[in-house]
Amino acid sequence: MEPYLPYEVEHIYPDYSLYPSLTKDTAYGYLTRGCPRGCAFCHVAAKEGKKSIQVANLSEFWNGQKNIVLCDPNILACKDWKKLLQQLINSRATIDINQGLDIRMMTEEKAEMLNKCKLRRIHFAWDRYEDGPKVLPKFRLFRKVWEQHRKWDDHSIIVYTIVNFDTTPEQDLERIYKLRELGYWAYVMVYDKEHCTDDFYKDLQRWVNNRIIFAKCKTFDEYLKFKYG
Image (cartoon, rainbow, N blue to C red; front, side, top):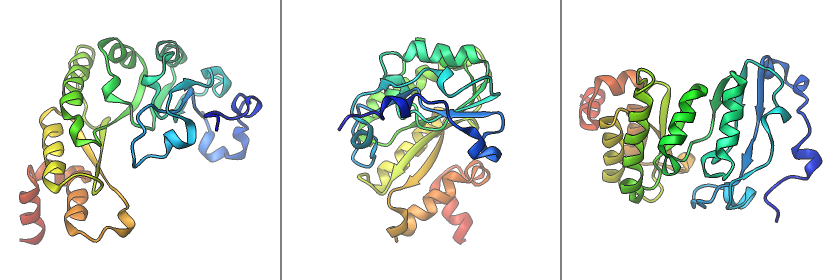
């Protein structure tokens, strides 16, 4: 199966008039498709291929709109990342990268270029507990570069954290505490939430994902005492 759509489909300019309430002053699209990671909980590799490749230039779905929603699964893994980020910079539009940027691919140069983009928010992910030694230095690097140019704002930088998949509750809490220590806000995503009956994960998600509660209760135990008395 080829990891891309037919040329005439992939490269046609979207008919934004179909969804006027969603697309007023906003462009949606992909610059790349595919991801080399092949995570067991994710369908991107099976659907789009285990390689991040460029499939479009920005001008193919953007024509001066004030906002851009980018849906790429792993743009930083694409060999053309520099050219594509420069297109986003040149647009001067407000950009929402709605998928998780691969922190494992972060370099100082990539962090500098992302800083030049007019980003509404950034999503990273720390889903695999065993990736800790790889991702923690990258999180530190990104924050260091970011703070050279602007005030750090954890409200606009979110780290997806999958739980109830292949980690223990202790490992889940370790990731959340470590991210908080580094100044990042974790966002707990319960795997197969529909069939999850463990109250631990429901309480964990409520604690972390509610910013007011997470700011007030510094530990999970403190939250449980706050909730249950």
